[in-house]
Length: 477
Image: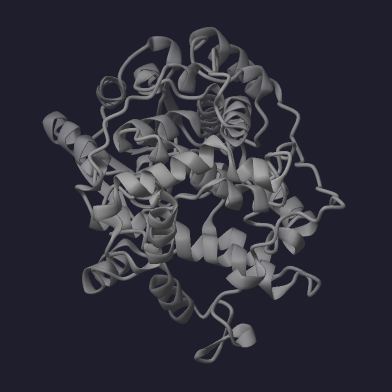
């Protein structure tokens, strides 16, 4: 018997691992969802996605075997049960992105006398071997170097050897706050849950009542068709304005012009190739700055995070500043939030509990910024992001949190700590009544205190020389 295993983050409509399989296996492990207090929406997305995938396969005539969540087993026990029950002699699966999963499955199969075959990870554009070779040859290279290599390697947005439009990126054009007169923000195309998804929502609410979020408010597509409709809506309605406002924030707008494709892309409901085809075929009305800004996130930042994760196996335990503070329970529960928590942090925290999501600039410059300024241990921050966000997995959270957001590696991933006072947040989001209130806010006070506390560790960073000089002038009598 030749079997194939489908993991919850590999919900592809077509998978090389399942092509020749006589039996396709799914394991719903309740224990896996209890390792952390995962947001209920993340659990719904994975469970509903797995069950829809299994139903699609059965509907096409494939034979499927499942371990249901109700069995309450660990993943390894569930897989072992299926292999034995069906007499599997061979197991294939797609390589998992997170470290250690492949080796654990392989060891289990060896113990059971089952032959194995691992297929390439299809969640990314860049083959793993090419990615590893590039990082090995560029131990201190930055994302911009990687991104230009990607553009040259793929030919995307290139005219021969030159970038389309004569520039590699349009960052200078893509840092605008929302206009003061307001702007019409197209709403996301929230799908109506079908019967299967509705049943999952009810089950998750019943089994995981103490986890953050409310499963009844689940809002994402869970099938490839639904994901493609979500993508098409983004290209038609939000991509044109994405670039200029990709770093903007607004207290009443959790999504703005962002695609919110990462929850779907990171579980295989969409592929990078599908997304590229859609955005590169966008009408000419889409400005190049918006198109390039989105492509940079997709083939630059996302793939760079994967490469940094693979190249730095010790990054998880980094703590450059030696920070020790533990996260208080309210970060996870959303209850009894302190009254003096700054407005931007409170607002974004509340919407993370509502949606399991915040866009990238809020993650970095509101939440990550505040965590670092307040001295929280970077591993605590990693655990929180991993639990609360619907698109969070180890391969992206370790380099994104430990490297970029918390600067825990001392500059391996990012060129400087991403910290700021209230002035930047006010400029990009108008969080306080006026600029003076932003300058006098607890956010600004924490920023200057951070620079003073870690002055010695930051003194050699050329990108912080001006900020450190300002800090010294402020404390001079």
